[in-house]
Amino acid sequence: MLIFKQDQVAKIVFSPGGSAKEIAVEKIVPDGGDSEEWVVVTPEKGPAKRWKISSLLYKLASLKAASVVADAPVDFSKYGISGSSRGVGLFDATGKELARLEIGKDVKDKPGAVYLRGSRNQVLQMDSAKLSDLPTQLDDVIERPFRPGQDGGT
Image 1 (tube, rainbow, N blue to C red):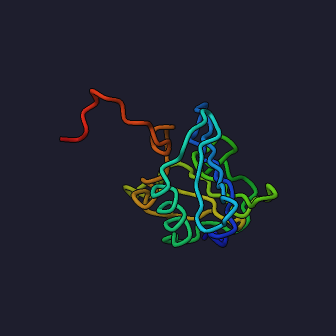
Image 2 (tube, helix red, strand yellow; image 1 turned 120 degrees about the vertical axis):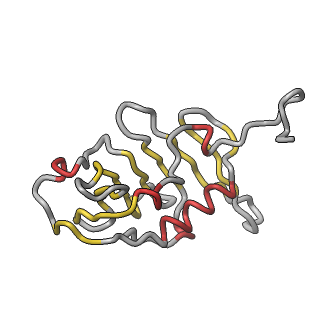
């Protein structure tokens, strides 16, 4: 469904959908090259939740659609898929798009199923629960510093 090599991904752009601002994270590899860090670059700057980004990349690489609805449709909008759809774009270090996922509207008469477009020019159908980890707001990916007085989860 999404065809990319995880180690080539240097930037991820999450589109929450509608008029919400995109959230972009970029990979930084220190001079030693032993580890990688992810940072949020828009709409705010800060460290990204590395475990969250790693988990998302793994899940995106292993997504499987339930079925192909249409090959090379003339009009993706009839499935609710457009430039303002919720989704994610994966890019390499040069800015070349490696893969894109765009989520459309719910499938009629199939509760929990949505239309989507992956790396190929197809409309696919999938259980929307498999896409529930995609960030919809900045706090889903940015690592906020702990402030004294905050509830530490206890």
